[in-house]
Image: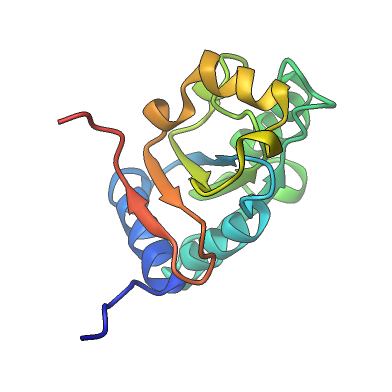
Length: 166
């Protein structure tokens, strides 16, 4: 018997619905973090599109952890203007900003997000892991802190996973 697996649009749409259930009003920032190469930018693009399909104004941004180790640049150049409704971010009405990157669950940026996604690819080889990324995962525990964990091993059929230990 064939096994049903959710399509990418279904998983992302359900995530958008969940976030909008809690944050439809105001200016909310959502982070899409993950292991390098997990597809954060594409996932964030699709999530922003899902918000737009639900009649929510959505913007996109990217955080570069290597360039902005303390998160100050992304806060000053992207998050602050978005929250104020300035510049490219409209007139201040309700909207969502989806930021993709790596190492977004660190103490420097985590508090900026109302919701976060952790994309993982569990089948990766241990030797493929950047030592800095491995240290970040041990120190920041993004899988535990994320609002939603997504196994992105198959990008067309991502699966929501849970970090509980029961």
